[in-house]
Image (cartoon, rainbow, N blue to C red; front, side, top):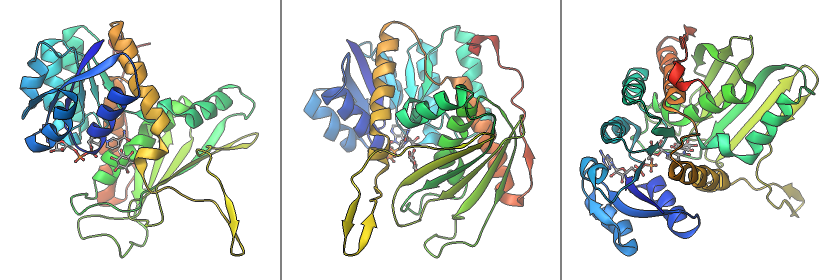
Length: 334
Ligand SMILES: NC(=O)C1=CN([C@@H]2O[C@H](COP(=O)(O)OP(=O)(O)OC[C@H]3O[C@@H](n4cnc5c(N)ncnc54)[C@H](O)[C@@H]3O)[C@@H](O)[C@H]2O)C=CC1
Ligand SMILES: O=C1[C@@H](O)[C@H](O)[C@@H](O)[C@H](O)[C@H]1O
């Protein structure tokens, strides 16, 4: 049994605790922590977990074999570095950090420790739909992918969500999954701001149109609209030389009523990728128990943050910003 400590008992922390406790196998949450300690007690007490009010004490608890970090992005580095220091595996929710510089510090610390310890929560790589699309592209039947049109539509966000977060908290999913999907690397990024919705606030530009150009010339266009009101709607269309692939959304009943044919759209990000989260965490438990680390790595987290930094820079100017990921360290070559 993998004894897991969860740092950060907010929305997704609670989700992961629930799936490990009630759905998955091979793992047990034995400790939880949150700076808001009452929140940690609320989820930790019913499952008999030790409750901490800080990350260091949880990481250093000898009864904790591995850590899940589900604090906000700005706090990830602290916990991940503590885990590397003591040599414990850590599953860190996306983004690895909020800047490429901080992610590089983690990459360097992991390499110095000489052991693969970090997995980043890019769960879309575990989604059946994205996996099917990847297989279709790799079959060669569609020819080369030329451009991608993607939407990351979210019903609403709070006032603590600002313009850069549209990139490093939200578009970070597309940043990671799209280059993985097409087997390419980004070379530049650009953002254009269309007319803004009245539902946004002064610190948030919404919507934003993001353009990512790959080395092959392929361009991915990502629409991020986080106050779209109508639902949580993730779409991806890949236009190839020999055909067009649309990412399948999970099947929902459609219905005819009052003179209309309706396809309902969900509102909740927790449900859209629920199977992907289950698979992701189950595979992490399985591989961690075997002393392996097979999922998205700290290097993948760094590449995503480097790309995010370029997009954030373009938010100010609208200009095309180059991206140079450099050479993949030997340590991360598969
Ligand atoms: N893979 C995915 O689809 C999703 C990933 N996330 C990621 O998970 C992380 C958490 O997001 P949410 O659960 O939505 O946030 P949240 O705000 O609901 O929860 C964060 C929790 O961390 C606590 N916290 C803050 N600083 C802390 C610290 N230094 N040490 C311990 N606890 C601390 C807060 O009190 C709060 O309980 C973020 O990085 C977010 O981007 C969130 C939702 C979906
Ligand atoms: O990661 C997530 C949230 O943090 C983010 O705020 C949402 O927009 C994402 O779609 C969800 O998956």
